[in-house]
Image (cartoon, rainbow, N blue to C red; front, side, top):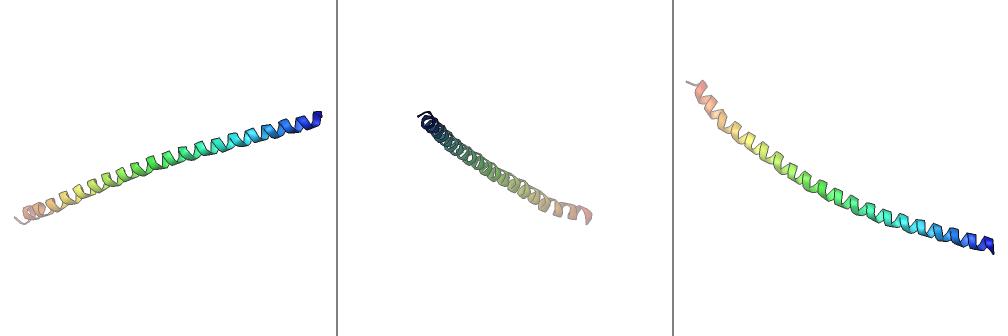
Length: 74
């Protein structure tokens, strides 16, 4: 009788550990989803910032070229 109860308690502990692992896996998955969505939104923000900087740079360059050209042609 002692061996059967030991086996039963061990199988109960194994079941508890499995449930614990499943819960941990679900928590990790939700944390990963949160992190990836944060990264995606920040990368979109960076694309927007780089686009703005490049646009301003190109606009300034296109404005300066004729000014420099007219100064050099005098």
